[in-house]
Length: 111
Image (cartoon, rainbow, N blue to C red; front, side, top):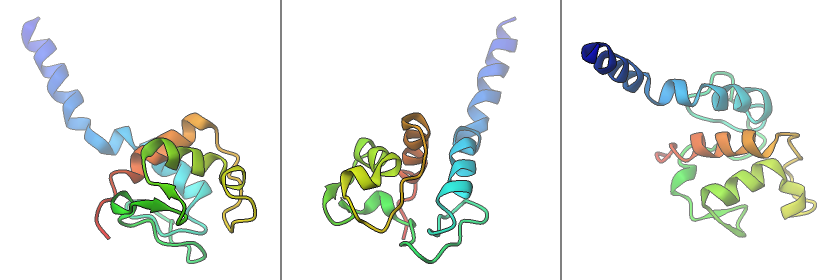
């Protein structure tokens, strides 16, 4: 029984970020990739908005807001409420979905 528990822990730890971020990558592909290049997301090759490669290293979002996960999630969910008239449209994503995307984007620390 102990070895079964150990095996389960090892298998779950092997899943890693790929499984944890699968939903975020799917959301990015369907909501963000039309406008943004997003590393690690198939089809996210848009050229309208900035590339999100290295976004985790940026200090500011939209040139106005501190770049932390909570602010990024809020920006993803409600960009027009945060900065009316900016080029990023409202996404229709829930706060939970936006937080998952922000968690994935936080892993993109290389330009």
